[in-house]
Image 1 (cartoon, rainbow, N blue to C red):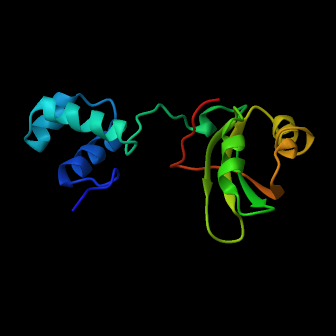
Image 2: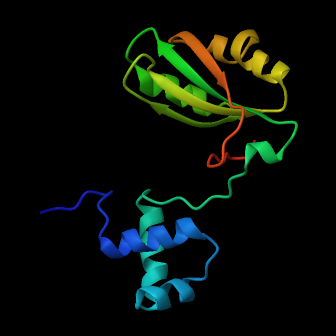
Length: 153
């Protein structure tokens, strides 16, 4: 049976779990814990990154920045052509992630901005208004989270 690009085996899963706990942990420590060589860990991580299964990034707690506002945008599309709209939204610098979903809304976007005025600018004055295919949006300002981290924009 041919493996898809996203198939991972037990060792891959263990490596990912170790990196989720501490992405800065040396490969040598992970290798010792998992009883494999350091080269095996390095090769596994590189392969997972190359296949798009794993991404190692620095993320920030948006609540550690008192002058940042994080929000979740729910987007309804005029037509079911989400790929084009997603690609346009992904180009917006303050958008930290975009995904399509089932349910009432077609897309969800995470955004981190410097002020409510910036959020208003994105929603109503220029940015999203200029993207074709968006029928409506609903915005949820994030008040707190113990688990959510964003890319700093």
